[in-house]
Length: 239
Image (cartoon, rainbow, N blue to C red; front, side, top):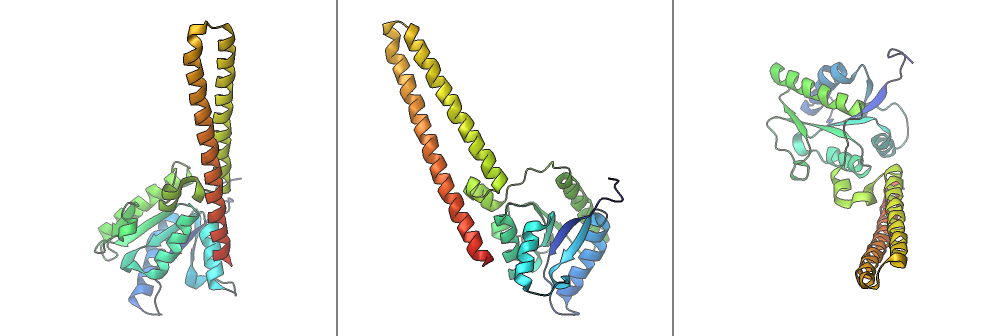
């Protein structure tokens, strides 16, 4: 499929919207028109909550977009409550987002460790720098060069992972357990051909490996419980 015929991805733009003719609405329009469309327009369809065409629950549509969107760009300017709520949902899905903020604003404390692009919408040089950074970040994301982990995922680990990530983790655990079982089998063979003087040290090795095995099994049970708890919470949120 050629580049021209390739369908565009979805970029969901999370931003303070405000009333018609408000400063917030004007800023959102300017960012979308002069920054996002120019940089991301060739590869992404830019979608905003106030422009959704479908009838029905706006909250349901927003949550679905937060899950489905290939990219989310969030404007943190003004510490808007809706932006914070929607970005938290995106983080709960452990999906990548790019953050923008007015240069005069302070990044919210809970997001200070997340890479954020500061800029001044009234400064052409600042806008150019923002577009350059946005282009660089989005290209790295589209080329799968970003191994993203949201703050929630970093805190909860596998409990906040996607289904694929959880399956990969459990597969790794099974491989480790198989490896331990192989080590135990190897030690049993060694005992058969070893001098009696070596049996004591070998027995200690076997015991250490069995302990590791038990710890891994306990960890897997704990992680599965956490995964189920998170899934239940997400199901309740969807309802």
